[in-house]
Length: 165
Image (tube, rainbow, N blue to C red; front, side, top):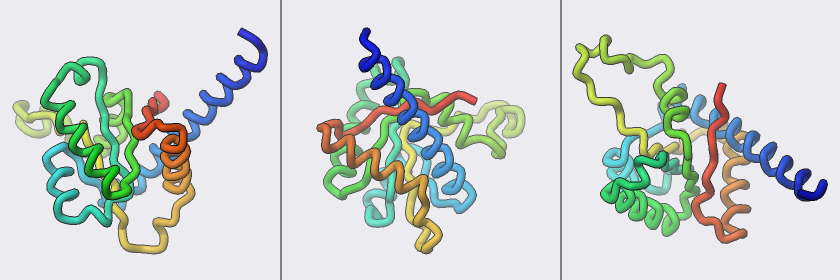
């Protein structure tokens, strides 16, 4: 590996870390503003009713999920719909970290719900526009720019890895 290749790889890693940090910030704000929709079915309902207010779609899957044919069909349909409606899409490769971010501060433990609770479906997460000027947020702008740059390089659904904390 040459020094130039090493430097380019390091710049790419640093950029991906910044995108991951921006995504964490966007999710945190969306949670506090209640502008987040979680679950494949719930996301499909929202996309059908109000696609113009969706600003970001996250699809989360690990290696086991990649073998789930039904889930992959849902992902394909959601991706097609998002592309058709100019909704930015990101694929998150570590759904465990996404779950940590989305479930902090909630009553997500089985003990809190009687022990038989089904874990929430975090395979699809939508962030919607809160109809206020405060959503002109640098973290969201950074994610949108990253998605656009990825599309210019023919990567329609860029994959990111959320940084572990």
